[in-house]
Image 1 (cartoon, rainbow, N blue to C red):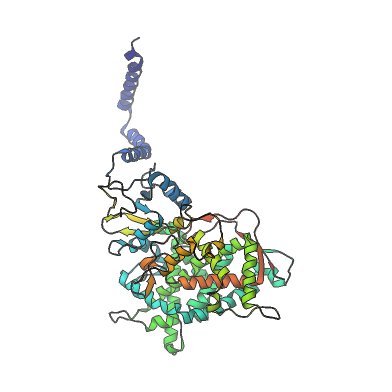
Image 2: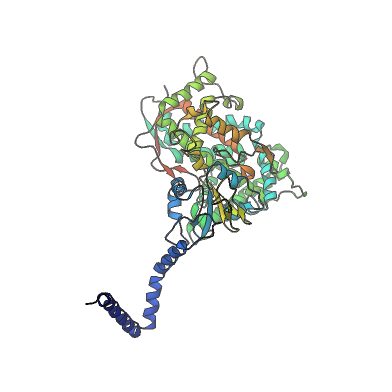
Length: 546
């Protein structure tokens, strides 16, 4: 046989058979065959599209098989590992597809600065986060209002975060933690007074309960704190379960968590409005808390805050004071339980500064807590390794060139992020980057003791960089630091000092009372929630101090 005969005759036979089958097939069967193969066709077309020559000004696109879904699985499972893998292939600037969105990621300190330092007219948070925050917090606040209004709202809230207020909060937090440990069944072994028996508590669950009590006691007011023992905590639970990646990706689905979220938001708004009405029936001037302050505030245009805005700000403030603190405090206690030697150093620091001659401890003060080097190092190192939020995103409102210092594909051309894309910075990556930090994946608080070391320099860049006022008071810009546990720029967390105080006060109160250890492997991060929490199991064994 000839060469042609060997290979063309079989194909000719297949074509004849195909023609006969198509001729005999009904239209419905052909339609069904086409529908069944649509996913395969979509995948093939998606792959072919990615193989086409690309505009040299476009950042490289992360390869993905499934259209629309894109890299959602890899990113959602472990975003830090995903970023490291992409950086090895594409460099510090690349675009990946996330559930239909094109997300251009800029890594490293310069990448952080690119996103955090961008002008609000070009990169904005509202379009990214409003679908998540508005159903939970409520209308006309945070990302459901113009940015200039948000800046004024942040200024109003700062009245509860002054130094004088922080001084008051130290004793409140200590009192709440002590009461919690005295009555909660989780701490039965502590309550019995045994110094030999070991008990156990689940780190994140326990700290979530503890921090909601301390946040409500300090930031909310007596009525809200008292309501925690009635029905308010259940409402908060339902609202909190509507603050997840699922609810961010899909604003409304016919699911129970969405119905409970909306019902809880409505009832919590009514709860706060009821408190305001009762205060007006009495003497509103008798109160000196954030709600009282909001009831007296006015916007620059002279408009007073309506009750629904005050209620929604109170909801946002409560959730902000609970989410990050509960996850961060959990990580602190887990590391201390994993390193009893450092826990002992922290305890001895308490003895040295607060120990009384006859035993026990005197009360802490705000100034005292700011001058405890071991506590400071433990908190900062934990926040370095466990940034509460791994990704910060902004919507691109107009074409955005990428500076050559961050990424330049050629001398004659630079990358441009098109309008409609999302840009992403990852403080979590820059804080765990082995190219930046020595032994980046090792929890080592001692790195912060060296006043001339890299950690101290990163902290200085974050805390003491050029000051800027976005409308709620001067803050350190700090956008190009590799250490950004509370964000940077106009959306830097205004509750940073409160969070450090809250976490520090909870930890020191507990370290005075109990010794801790963990068994088994150290918990890995859980990236499936909005905050990076410890994976289960995350149990801590404890016993009462002798």
